[in-house]
Length: 159
Image (cartoon, rainbow, N blue to C red; front, top):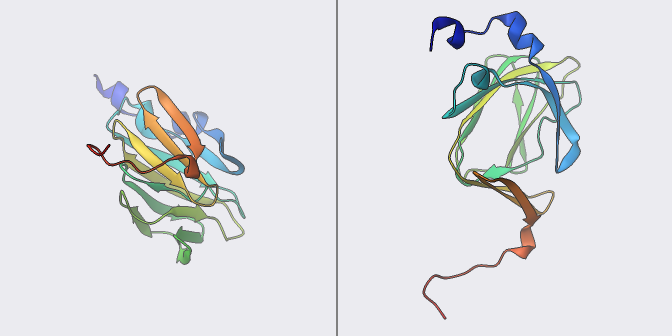
């Protein structure tokens, strides 16, 4: 790769932004720019995320295998960790470790909230959406969702 392949200037980043609505809950959404994908990164994700006033970027969710994080650039809001809400503002950083609490970022301010959001990209993951009663699996074949109650515990080796 040459230097031009590894650099994206601000105008190209702005041009790559797109409106995102979550497929499981269209009431949640943001404007997203996948900056890491723009330069060919495949082991981690970094997205520039803009959350409008009163919006929530993603439904409350928890990853079993993926670690995520959020760094607030501007605006104010809250992070939900399970059912607890914590204020966020410019310069604040929140980690969402795998198998950690369900989480979501909400813009509670009157202006757009701008964040860098990122994660590692494990080959597979299981994501629970407690408020939606859904479990999603991610594999190389894509995403699949099912009602959380449709899964049953199994014990390998027992008959």
